[in-house]
Amino acid sequence: MLPFLYQRLLKPVLFRFDPERVHDWFVALGDGIGRVGAGRGLVSAMYGRGDGEASVIVDGLRYRAPVVLAAGFDYNGRLLRILPSVGFGGVEVGSVTALPTEGNPPPRLKRLVRSRAIVVNKGLKNEGVEKIGDRLAATQTPEDFVVGVSIARSNREEAATEEGGIEDYARSLEHLVRMGIGDYYTINISCPNVHGGESFADPARLRPLLDRLSRVEHDRPVYAKMPINPPWDEFRRLADVIEAAGLHGLIVGNLNKDYASVEHPAEAPPEYRGGLSGLPCRGPSTELVARTREAYGDRFTLIGCGGILSAEDALEKLRAGADLVQLISGMIFTGPHLMGEIADAYAQERRPTRPEPPVLDRSQATRS
Ligand SMILES: Cc1cc2nc3c(=O)[nH]c(=O)nc-3n(C[C@H](O)[C@H](O)[C@H](O)COP(=O)(O)O)c2cc1C
Image 1 (tube, rainbow, N blue to C red):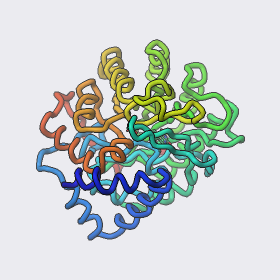
Image 2: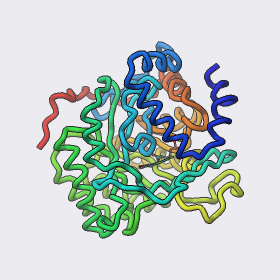
Image 3: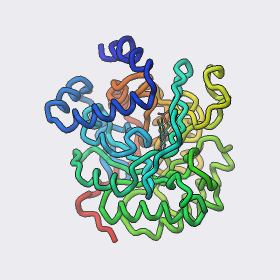
Image 4: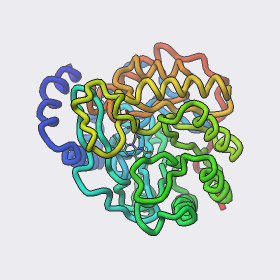
């Protein structure tokens, strides 16, 4: 019933409006409903799932379900209260930057409806690590709901040089660690929208960045958000740098920059700027998950992200070797019932996993 209502009634109406406006409405609505117990109860009743156990422990963190809201939707950390009721096992807040960032001039998002993709040209719009950190510190979440924070370089002139960019990441991480915010951290090395300066998705630039960040003492898992467009050899060189720096894992991956990959190319005229989410990400990200698992064994935690539009798509990434999945576009194109369906499908077909490590006591964590 819910899938039918979303597909036939709600989505056709919502898709008449500008995507960023719809996004802002949903964030305001989710924030409001999440503050009221009865609101959360109603949403849980609507999106409640079957009885099967779908929780999973990854790097000592317990997720109530193996599906996490990817970075970029709750970029200011306003939805933590409602997301557990919609079936998510966690959220990756951000990407946050050290300085508040206005983002690129609008329009920043464009739906490619037939191709089931979104052109994203946000330019890392967010309120900055200090304000977002305060908000996260003031928000209670259930024990089995994981709050990760994605860190990127401020999309501003000040952070455009290599050294400025590195210090900018470090400032965000230090602030979060000082406040004790974030169950895990993601270093977004692959954001295609950064103002000026080279991306850190290059081994020579990535090494000094990770060296600097490794000097920030904390006991949380750290992941790198990977680009999905480099050929395997290049991807591997990045993964080798990340392995040497001792990060826990990889999120595979970010937006697809290849406009030739959309199913209906006429929908994506070449003058558009930004990366593509959704279906164009599905094949490349799943393939990279499989190749990385094969090449690196259990060395990395792998989080599969990109083009998960059905429960079967999620299982495909888990079968390819992912420990968890993340999504945004599936929630928009398929509907908010998708997360419950993924959890149910996962509960029915639990991947043979490595022995579960102990759960970290999140309240006992020590930090510098
Ligand atoms: C509107 C929007 C904003 C995004 N912003 C970020 C971001 O700030 N940081 C980041 O690491 N990824 C960002 N992404 C990429 C997503 O996290 C994800 O990697 C990508 O959308 C592929 O997943 P999907 O096909 O499920 O949407 C954004 C994606 C969308 C759709």
